[in-house]
Length: 347
Image 1: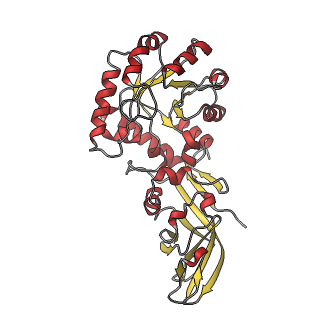
Image 2 (image 1 turned 180 degrees about the vertical axis):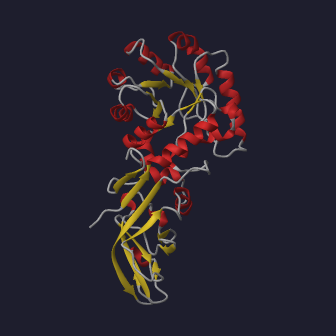
Image 3 (image 1 turned 90 degrees about the vertical axis):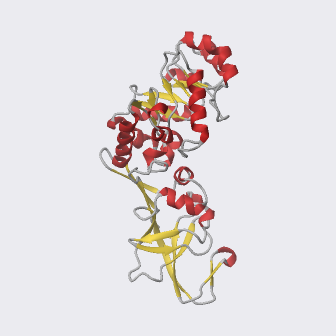
């Protein structure tokens, strides 16, 4: 059986980065954590480097190791989780730059890798990672004497341009970094769209590179085609799938496609999602199971070999809305069983 095919347009990713870079009016990095949001850190980062990106951000040192192998010695790689226990060798040998999140991490870094580059992450109100104002005030003299490569924070509500927290976090970050010569960063994709007050010295777009909201002008990046295994006739009154949640009300043609929640297509799509045969919608019927999805293809004059769940008619955000989640989860949940195909320059 042919595996489902995930097609990733590297040129679209590069074009999205270039467009966000033009909006940034400053250096533009690229966030490629979580395997480049599920699309493949190696090919994606290589195409972004070719487009001009010189600074990259990952979540963990292990991701940094994979990225360094793909990019070689040139680009900077920052690690959001900072200097965790056990990271020292990777940070040193691969020239990864930890973003220090606490006084404890600062002490660990100073003792284990004195003189090695580092950055600092501050908590400007999100209460997730980074030093809060009191902790930062206590260690600031030591940190600044050591010469951080970057001081950053993260906006909690940048996808909502009118949210009051945006201005509050901007004011807090500006106050916490007043008088500092080190480069600063506050904006990911949403922050870039808030305007130049949020851009500082470097921006670090993530989801916008991959075609997701809140960057509405993004080029679509991913197409996901699911091969049809079998098509059957279902008579009125017959049920389809686990628990019999869908019952035919008319003679129907039901296609079973090769993908399910083991491939990141969430069970919450059951009975709600739509697959596409070209321009024709084919509604999902019954429950999404581990490896299979069933949909109604009664209206098709010709039965195709595959149906699209991501593509021209359904973006990651549109599918996410149906599933009751966000585009980030759709992308990063894409399973390892897909046959991946990269298109565009360098593919």
